[in-house]
Amino acid sequence: MPVYAYKGVSSAGRNTKGTISAENLRAARSRMRTDGVYLTEIRETDARTDKKEDGKTESSILSRSFQLPVRIPTQERAIATRQLATLVGAGIPVVESLGALVEQIEHSALKAVFAQVRDKVNEGSSLADALVATGKFDTLYVSMIRAGEASGALDRVLQRIADYMEDQVRLTSKVTSIIVYPAVMLGFALVVVALLVTVVLPQITSLLLSLGEELPFYTRWVIAGSDFVRGWWWALLGLGFMGYIGLRALLRTERGRQVADRTKLRMPVLGRVVRIVAIARFTRTLSSLLSGGVNIVQSLEISRHVANNAVIADAIDDAKTSILEGATLAKPLRLSGEFPPMVITMVEVGERAGDLEAMLAKVAETYDEQVETTVTRLTSLMEPILILLMVGIVLVIIMATLMPLLSITNSLQ
Image (tube, rainbow, N blue to C red; front, side):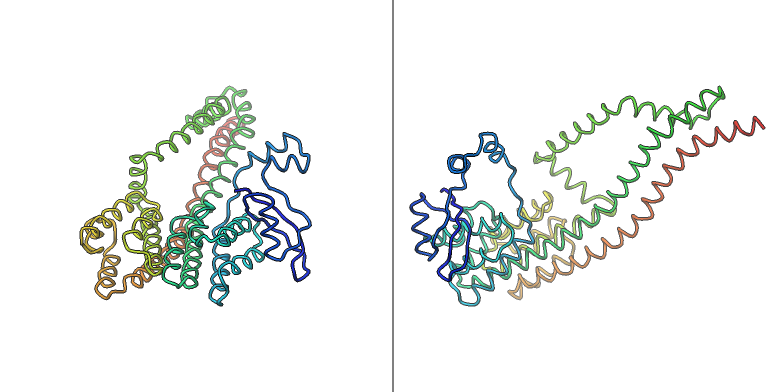
């Protein structure tokens, strides 16, 4: 369905603008008159219409058609969801709440998405179906909205979705902090080493070779390594790029993901962090879905993808199969061997008490705290290790060049 961008004046006399989807231009104008908006400008946002109305060149139209899709940050989605929950909770009808939400959103891409949702709901679609039509919302989001509409508790479900998304943002930030700092330090070390090998070392090497003295073995190795890097840097970059492409292709296969994720879980220190993060995502997602009224089988199917680990996902899939056969959730999780005893115990208690979602939420909170503690320890541990590594590499290069110079200077004296 075409999308039209419009500018106009509202019934209250204020300037307004936005987007609306309609079958044609006449339907769009009729819709705006019904909403009480006097149009001053309306045009289809499709590239072909832009060409006719704005007289743009073919090259500009093609460049627009090949633009990459705009990524909407999770934090922006969470803020919009919480605002919608407040509006719906205040007793405002969903269509009017969506209209008010569109006016409040500042992110342009998200604003356009919710404008489409508003138009779909105004045409008679349910909120969940309207979200599906945009293609911008995942299965978890849509499933909880559908359950909230069915139970008549849409405002509470929207609040839970916002809480869940904000928790995911915080968890992702904690995990990212483990990677960013070592990556920056390692990149700085590589830049320093590259400058020494390509700029400083060749000048000193020519001086050492001109003196005709026999060089130590480690100096010859450093010189040979420098010559190799300067002569074959293009081949090294090509091999690195090909290796990256090959690794990505391998990780797209089922077997490759299994091997990679199992390797991550077995790593000495980081493996525990990977397992904690996967279980925290799984338990929080399952808790949110169950609290939102989604049945446990569908909740497990959604949660297995959120865990983002093939090994944990297989264990969850086995649990889903066992539940369909009449078993409890705790038993297959214990048999998998991938979940710590505390998780199993909390799940068993929750099932016996009939309050599984609350117990899962407590597990997620506990593991979030463990992630934060572990990240802090790893960051404080990696800092001196990376500094020592960088200093060691630089020291080896410096010693390989200074020691022969000192030896030659002593022999001359």
